[in-house]
Length: 152
Image: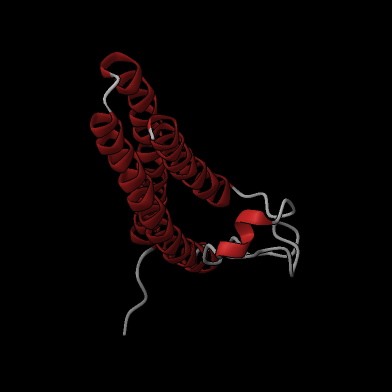
């Protein structure tokens, strides 16, 4: 089997980086949409003063945050896959020398674990985004429950 030429490998590496950045942009976009929906939840509650409207808006926010969490988990798996591709391309291109990347310093992103959300020592972007989804979900639930308690 013939080895690929270096230009083809560079193209694959470039595409992997683009896929990674696209997935990360989509994940941030999901958080932005959820935040806008959460602001809309408060606005709907204040504007219409309807428990039913507030509950429905809260359900929309909670569902979007839940699906945002699923998107984040999926994109973390995509990130892991793309970084493996990039690593292999860099290795093929001879970019993995001890003077460039000291041995033992390269770590691939692992899956998002639920317990990482509650460990302040875990400080990576994927976990931060996941925490934001959780905060928005918790906000929607607390807001709707508080609204129900006030009305009953």
